[in-house]
Amino acid sequence: MRIQPAIKAAVSFGAGIFITFSQSHSPQVGLYTLAVFGLVIGLSSVALAFARKLEGALQELPMATLATLVGIFALLAAQSEQGQMAAFVALVATWGLISGAFGLYQARRFGFKELQGRDHLLSSIFALLLGALFLGLDLDPVSAVGFFGAYLALDGVHWGIASASPKGK
Image (cartoon, rainbow, N blue to C red; front, top):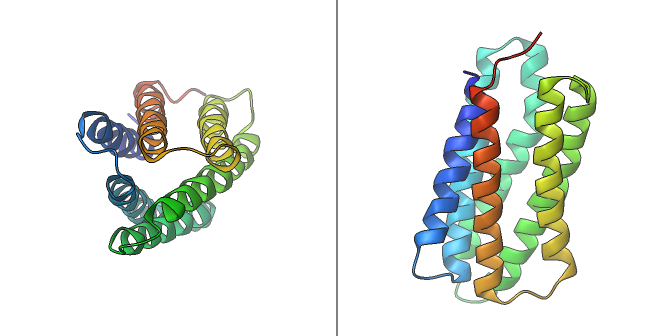
């Protein structure tokens, strides 16, 4: 089992299930979920990167930084009284587009014919679609939080399958 995809799977799927079964689909719930998601993904990526050689650590630094910053900004926005929906939309669109673009880079780096490359490619497609959805449509709060939860659940299932798959050659 690959540890980093397993952590991504557990955090993403857990957050997606939380949103799915939450009675409130308010922007505040979405922001707190995004905060936990970002901080756990970011800090666990940093911890795992330090356990690897220097090259592996440098490759994970951009995503870890992005996830941690999105988590911090989401936490700050959730505690504000006004502008929660605008902050949620902006942070999710930012997360989707930047993490999707970086996922495409990772997929190309690993190679599209390799297992890890295909894993990153599929995850980046999910993220880019999420970012485009939040950027291109005027979503109401229930739909926005619901789409974010659906993205998390899909991405969690994908990374769960990826973490249980053999490493390949």
